[in-house]
Length: 99
Image (cartoon, rainbow, N blue to C red):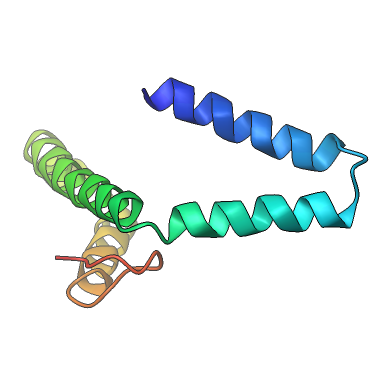
C-alpha cells in the first residue's frame, strides 16, 4: 500500500510540474490535496503512523545504545540527548501529538 501511495504522489507531482494546464488546474489540484489532508481519517492515520514511527525509533535507539555503549562519540551522544529532550510533549512540526 505504501508503494502505491508513493507512486500516486509522484504521479501527482509530475503532473503538476509537467502540465501545461495552467494556474486554474493547479489551484484545483491544490484545493483537492488540502481537502484530503484535512480529512479526519487521513489525519488520524498520519498521527498513528507518526506515533508508531516514534515508538520504533525509541526501540531502535535503545537496541543500538546497548550494543554501542561507551564507544559512541560524545558529540553524537549530546546530539541524541538534545533531540530527545526537544521532542518531549506538545506537538511536532506536522501538528500531531508528540506523546
